[in-house]
Structures are given as C-alpha cells and as structure tokens.
Length: 218
Length: 218
DNA sequence: ATTTATTTTTAGATTTGCCTAAATTTTATT
DNA sequence: AATAAAATTTAGGCAAATCTAAAAATAAAT
Ligand SMILES: [Mn+2]
Ligand SMILES: [Mn+2]
Ligand SMILES: [Mn+2]
Ligand SMILES: [Mn+2]
Image 1 (cartoon, each protein chain N blue to C red):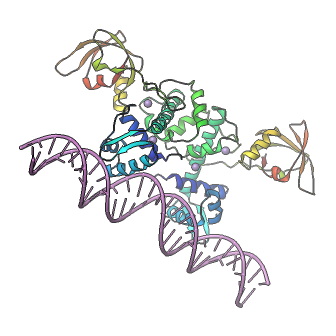
Image 2 (tube, chains in turn green, blue, yellow, orange):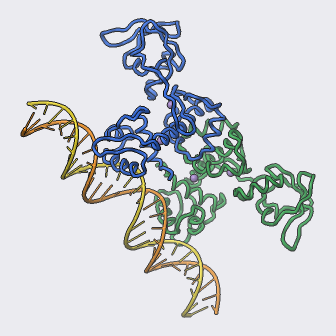
Image 3 (cartoon, protein in one colour):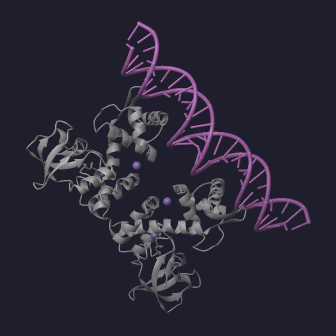
C-alpha cells in the first residue's frame, strides 16, 4: 500500500511537470526530471497505472489520478515543511536545502509531519515562496506570474522563484532579491528582453529576461 | 563508497550485538536483529567483508573493522541526535521515537547532522540515556551497570535503559522512573530476584528482576 | 503521401536485497 | 567416538529498479 521511494519520486515528478493541473506529461520529460532512461520510465508508468495512481495511455502520456494527485501533494507538503525547518531552524541558506529535503520527504510518519508543521507554526509557504499543501495533500495554487508578463510602472512583490538551482538563488542573494522584495518595472528593452527594474524603491538595476522569467510576482 | 540503507542497518546491528567491543557476533543473532533469514545475512556479510567494514571468518562469526566501527558510530550518532530532536523539540514521548529515528538515521548530509547537533546544544546523551558518539563516530562508553548487580543500601541514579520497547518505557513512566531518577535498593528477594526499592527517596515499590535488569544505573 | 526523425515501448541483462530448501560445518549429546 | 542437533553456508530463484539496443508507433518534413 505504501509507495517506495522510487515510486514517490516519479509521482512527484509527474506532479511538477503537470504544473498542478491535469495536463498530460510525456515519458521523455519524466525521464529528464528523474534522470533515468526513458525505458525505465515506461516500466514505472505501468506499475503506477496498476496501482491506479496515474492515468496512462501508451504513447499518449500520463496524468495523475485523484489518488496520485493527493499522494503527490503529501510528498510536496513534506518536502516543503522540511525545507522550511532547514532554513528557519537550522539556518541553512535557501539554495542549500533542496537535496536534503529530497531525502527527508520520504520519511514515513504522519505524526512526525503533524508535529513538524506545528513546531514551525503551520507555515503556508516554503523558503522559495511555494505553497505548502494541507495534511490531505490539497494545494491551493497561488495566483502569481513571471515578472516578464507583469505590467510596467507598477510595483510587484516577489512571491516565489521559478528555478531552484543554487546558481539562480545565489544570484538573487547578490542582487538582494528575496521573497517579498518589491520590484517596479522601469523599462523593458525590446532588443534582448532585459528589464530595467527598481528594487524595493531604491536602486535601479538591469536584469536579463532569463532571470525575470524566473521571478514569480504578485 | 556510501553505504546503502540495508548495509547501514547490518553494520548497526553488528555494533549493537557486539556491545561496542570487539566481541564476535553470530549470523543468527544478526538475522534476529534485522529480522531476515540467516542466508540473507550470510550474503550481506560477504559484501561487507569485501568492503572491509567487517572481519568475517565463515562459520566463526564477525566483528567490525576499524572503519566499520566508525561507520556504526556515525549512524548511531545520527539515530540518537534525531531521537533527541523528536523528544526535545517535537514533544514525542521517549517510547515513540525509535521507529522514526530508524528512518532518519539514514539521511545523508554531514552538514545537516552538524547543524542539528548545534541546534540541540550538542547533547551528550539521548532520551534513553545512551551516549551520543562524536562527529567522527567515536563513542565514549558510559561506565554503568544493571540495577541487579548494584550494591544494596546505596543510592543509584538511572543512567539509561537496557530495553527500548515501548512496553518497558511506558511501564517506567507509570512507575515514575526516568533518566536521573534516584533508586535505593532496600531489599533483594532471593526467591524471585525481585527488588524492594526506594524511588527518589520517597515511595517504596517492588520491581521484578526482569525490570531491574534493564535499569542501567551509575 | 512518402520518407525521415523523434518518441516510446519491448526485449534482454544486471545489481541489490531478499527468500526457501538443501548441503555443509560446528557443537552437543549420548 | 559416533550420532544427533543446531548453526551456517550454498544453490537456485524472485521482485524492484535500473540499463542498452532494437522494434514499433507517432510526429515532422519533404
Ligand atoms: Mn525524493
Ligand atoms: Mn522549495
Ligand atoms: Mn535504520
Ligand atoms: Mn535511544
């Protein structure tokens, strides 16, 4: 009844690739996400379909079933609660926690997660601004968008990051951009898509389109 | 180079069965400890011997190598630090933490354990009174003995418990006996080995030999 | 509409950790 | 010392998760 670590990682990968919706996910995309061969993914998809965790049509891709979606939500909840613990209590930096949470998310004990949640004050978002699903695995999606499609001359607030890589997160640290930072688009450069932005109503800097795309604001 | 969860569990089992010494451990004892068939243990012993973690002589039993002993110490350190976290920070009772620590002890990150240790104030003993090995895996054995061989009419202090079962720990809770409790042997009953003891210089109760054997005092 | 390219699945192997049953070695008992 | 009992190892197999290479299905390009 309880899923293996491998199964949990696949379920979570499908969840992330389908962006919390019912979007169909391809075999190759999963293979890339979990870093395995496509053939290995096919094997696993058959197993997950047998367990009714996904809807799988050969050659057509997969989506999570209702059960699969809730399971994914619970794993994501654990991942994000542990990340919050690591940053809030153990003083890890936000670019250092992903690998460890990747392991901790598989620890099996509902009681543990309930107590951890309480210990942390039942946080609603993790250190990267991502929402934490409830104990049943339900996730309330946050209505936010990349800075690239946000309106000019308006002040936006950084809600989360669209990339968890430490190179990206460390760059944000250097630029003094974090969750909650106010950003006003001063000018958009047609040429390379870069943006002239005002940070926290203070200094004005230029950021690349690549960076702006991964700043999720509300 | 890094050991699997199964390998770690076997190394730890051998460590516990050899009571931190160089005592030789039998296949059946390990099989019983890790709850597997004896043949499975033999397979694993060959693998651990190849990796130079144990000294293995077929039919003669095994003991940990220097490397194996340090690896065991590191796993035990993690187990006991996590137990301390669960009790001190998440308010688990001391009879509820073993199963979860059994999982958490396999999380791989030296940085994590270093920070956890610091967060907990570098505790020297875990919730059961067992010493916590240092970061290198070295353990300073505590010189303590079962209450059954302690002197009469002297006051002893409970240092640790010789049994982690929740039935035993819950019984101690009922008897108001915990780590640090003062116990004076009032009388030893020849007939069944039970002891008349005075708890914290207050009430006098009778405890069975079975119970006294698992009260480790100093 | 064919041909080509890409994606996905199938086929056949490997490794790890486990099992049962049979053979072997060691230990205990007549 | 011979035999019986217990402990341990070997033999052969199985399930999970992975791989590479080949076949099949789908999508893209001419
Ligand atoms: Mn994971
Ligand atoms: Mn996160
Ligand atoms: Mn364990
Ligand atoms: Mn303990």
